[in-house]
Image (cartoon, rainbow, N blue to C red):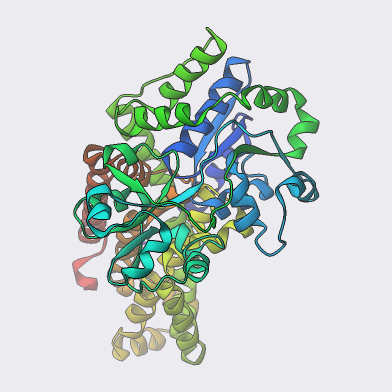
Length: 496
């Protein structure tokens, strides 16, 4: 017979274990990075430079600008690379900030800014040179004459204050067939002529590789995007030497140097950390840099542990909450429909939207991902608990009452055992859904199998994508098989 107390104890043990593990984790300076190559290279530069000076660091690869900014304000990260244009036109879009006012405005938020790193990575629009030549397009304003072109922009560019909506209005561009997609996938779509115009960065390695024409910003819409490091001012008070070390990197990275580093990662398939170390050695001389190249099995082990942590904690918490709610819903039909309805509404909210909403509340990393997975786990368990209890034949309930069993004893000895198979089916459904959905946690630094998938998309590396996708699929099958075995060997056939 399945004991709810056993499930509850297991859930609490898992939750407490994670709490104690986090409490005793080694303190390190956390450096964040956006999920594109240049940001990751710059974050590695900072991490390797600080490590060389004896400072313990850890790297978190997160989502877009707003995710990193909120993570910095919440204290989830201490440092991350960004651009002056992003700060002015995205982070402080409503305040009309000038570049010389950034330091003061940031200080009011508890954030410091270094001097520029040495290069300007402004936005631009790009086309395949051959296609642009055939259409005689050299400037952005030339697009006005070609309303039938299909444009594809990164999701962030589609929504940014300095992105497509304002650019379209500024140039009065007539194109309506505009798609949002991952920045790295846009190049492949351009190569296949699925798209004709995409957004690019001035230091993109793929500009030369795909033989693109960078359209001239003839009306001077795009501002300067000088690369800088942002850091929490609390870090300056606690460890002023860290900020001093960051300032030593400023002014050292030229436009061509950044293009070369991006090319080494994306086209030469050299690791981000190795490229960063090579630059530091060439710029500052020999240092005690350590780049550890993990094997496939080491990466698989680490990602599996992270993924199991996300799924196990969220599922354990959902079992603790959803089964009692399902019992309450079965015993109180009036409120039961409301409870199940609320759980159903939660299930319809896109997982990405839910992850972003959680960041201001609980920060980045594992906790928001676990909360989202917990919320998505509720409905199948809740609904199946309710269904299992409501589908017990009335004669059995009446027989238990005739024997004089009080309601609590009847629930524990008769109703829950008879509903166990249905409840287990709901838990199995939640577990399998969680295994797949947990891959999205990598977007906010939660790790798991989603991390190699995102890296593979960024580097156009099918092997890396499969390194995350195949284990995730296998884990889902194993979880389903485990619960099927549990159902067959623990739930009595007489309770079917």
